[in-house]
Image 1: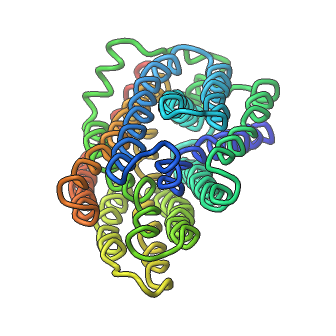
Image 2 (image 1 turned 60 degrees about the vertical axis):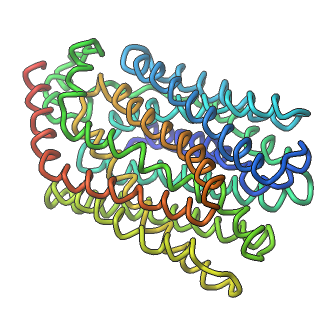
Length: 427
């Protein structure tokens, strides 16, 4: 990497870190917020855990689709800066809310940041790194996202009980105002297609790859089996995360006899292990890809199915010892997050430079639908069967995901080769 590319990568990672730090700031203080607004236990789970999560991710998904199309047609640098700044402003203003309605709509608007940033960040990554090194690059950005989630959870869990649940929102939003300005004034956008083998010779001759998204290119996305399988597993794949980052903290604090701080540390252990798991998944996935592309979806699907086991044990732990759930949390976070960078790398490898923003927007839409509908579905299940049964049902959603990713082993290598053929013809 050149120093300029390294600087771009650093700012991308930092911006994603603080955007994702906002994601779960409500979770450690659900009961405190419910008490302030006069909610009972059911209203706490439905309104704070379900309704807000639904609008947060649904609006984020809609914005991601619009931003994804713009990503493939417009300069990406100013668009990324605008998304970051617009997304962080309502997060910062959450520190001043006085009513539930204000909290609801500010959380909805905050979803713009995460929803819009994802297709932009990965479109830029695709033009910063070639196929043989994308796994590591995706792992680094995933590391930043996971670290952000963990930091946000830690701040909310330890600052919230002492200084009020509002302050963490202001703490995590502030840095991105500076990072956004640095990105605007110091980053140069990478040339589209510069890392594609089929285009390198023509670009070296001084030509410009000017292809942009249109309806026929959107059709290419949906005619690619790898894309379809990844999109289909996206919604069920995010449902169990609603348990971890919306309900688990409060579940361990209120029903298993742990303090809020201890429960926060258990959830933090998931987040901390997720950071390592995502990094290992990206690096290991890249290593396996360079030996055989089929091994990348094998790693993604296999790790998803294996991760169901420690998750079930973590949910069923009866309480008492603090060490056992901490170990189970580490195993859960590490195993499940190996999948993420593998899936994102696969998307980069089977989509053209001018369609990656839209492809990632569709992936993000499925992801956001799962994140939004997941807590809402879980909240309904809680009302009918109680928390524990609802959480176990959510965990089983990963079975479908693992199977879909294993099926993609058949299609991923041929879809990647077909893309290079199309680029060569287009060149």
